[in-house]
Length: 213
Image (cartoon, rainbow, N blue to C red; front, side):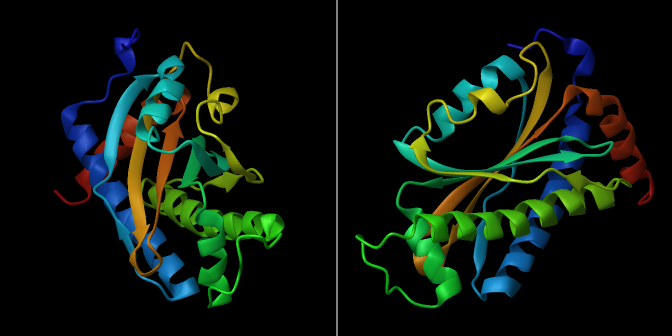
């Protein structure tokens, strides 16, 4: 439950943000498809306003059918700031490597842990960079990024808990599910914005709408 109602965004602002997310996620999917020549299907983005202390439980509930996951985490900075997380279910790494390799020649016994990490890193750079960059562009901001962190085949129950913003803060969580249909691969993209961005975000969303009026 939210403890700080001062930072609430309105239903109209949520609709605007969802429209911007649709554009940004579409850009990310197009950039990835151009890189690996594969169609990426994105779900309708979902927006939630949560107490930061509730984020680990929320992420765990979204990933509850997966015992282990691989994750790419990257912080972004600007007026729009926060963290982005890409989650992939256990066993995805080998199929992801084949997206770049062009084949499925790897056996289950092959030692490709580092190749998996490099592949997740590459896909994370494309999806997160394109998505955050487009959101920032549409809202009149410019983003910079910290080096991404990649964890392969970890328990989903505690993989995010040490990476979240201050527990007393409120966060906007933007989530979409993406699928690579040809390879039967799916994953989750979460964007968590920091509370200090809220005042700017509300103003930027309203300015975005004004240009079409």
